[in-house]
Length: 112
Image (cartoon, rainbow, N blue to C red):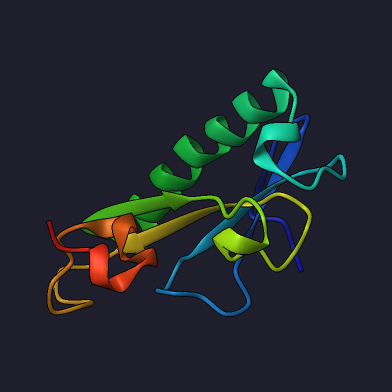
């Protein structure tokens, strides 16, 4: 899968099964299972790629918003045990009621 963006410690690729068009995965080069196992420098590198990815997507896809997310542990839905930060572009109308955003990981608790 070709890199879309990269820096010294991490890279970005388009998700093979995107939630929305332009969905990026931001991944450290070093194998590390969990966000909380990353070094401070790796977390910073991933956040820098998130900002660059946002700018890229705003230019190329013109989304109306974004979700950022990391699944840490099997109970949280992690299925690939190499940390990756999701940058998901959101578009007005992509779901009927987006209120609650990332709270939708538990649908019954999305609305508050």
